[in-house]
Image (cartoon, rainbow, N blue to C red; front, top):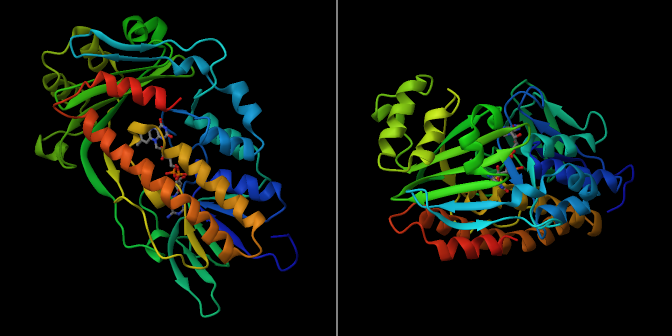
Length: 384
Ligand SMILES: Cc1cc2nc3c(=O)[nH]c(=O)nc-3n(C[C@H](O)[C@H](O)[C@H](O)COP(=O)(O)OP(=O)(O)OC[C@H]3O[C@@H](n4cnc5c(N)ncnc54)[C@H](O)[C@@H]3O)c2cc1C
């Protein structure tokens, strides 16, 4: 597709890693695009932890976006270190990342977003525009309605708006379901000075201990911080049923410590010493395989298309690869309907495989059978 006065109007809903990657590659080819995000500003909310950008997914997308060198310069290759512990603290598996390993360097989500945002022309992302609904028009175009009362007529809307996508209902009735697992996010600041034992346990990269249907996953971030997830099986109403409120940090801490009775003191220390901020993240996924009948004028990518559990570390990676594939199809194909068809033919099988693996991985990690150390070691090698 070439950029002319008849260039179709393309809008992306969602300035996550998938939407921003798509916008960057389209702009590089001279194709105009606007991104809408409901957040009032890029710094409005904590962007979360760290992501590893894998060679054949996230890095491939960054290369297509012309940003791989910049990514390599700011990423943390030492973050590829990984340790797996039993609940008694025994080290089951350890990977020490050798000098020069670039298979899956880590980057904080906020830094990745900053890298992508910086690469876009000023004004590309319109923050504070929350998509409310869409309506098809007779001429094949769609009208987007935003909560601020504005509307926009588009030839293609790309739903990159995450788990609870407002674009998805245009093509699919699928709804996220709870995987039966809760992640409680916890954080540590100034770890080397204030939490030296935690810093030692987690090391330069990641540490996980999964046993008895629960576990703890911890990852070092930039800025001398650690973010961890306390995982267990329960319903989305776990707080209400236990009469807990997240801002009552001492009660939540006591409940978690009770759950992890009998675990080694160094693992329990993560719950004892973390900041007073506890965030409940029930894990949701979309049914596998993702599938819909291709429809001109609309498509989905990333979590909006194939929300999956985070255990495979593939969510952001595949969202970015989806974005790269879609943008390249738009650039390559003669018109938008052909581009959407070509993109979805690539995305569906990949998403089906990755989402199925993520689902099985989560069910296996948070199970009676964990720790399956052979499986963890293979998974780790497989992601390299
Ligand atoms: C605990 C946890 C750990 C994870 N760890 C990893 C990991 O290590 N590696 C990895 O690859 N993935 C990981 N993931 C998954 C990863 O975060 C997601 O898969 C990834 O962010 C999806 O990117 P996206 O661009 O599709 O959507 P998102 O990042 O969800 O972005 C969607 C954007 O759309 C905007 N939006 C939503 N609704 C609207 C609306 N109505 N109007 C306008 N804007 C809207 C939102 O504000 C947001 O900016 C993890 C997820 C969780 C929960």
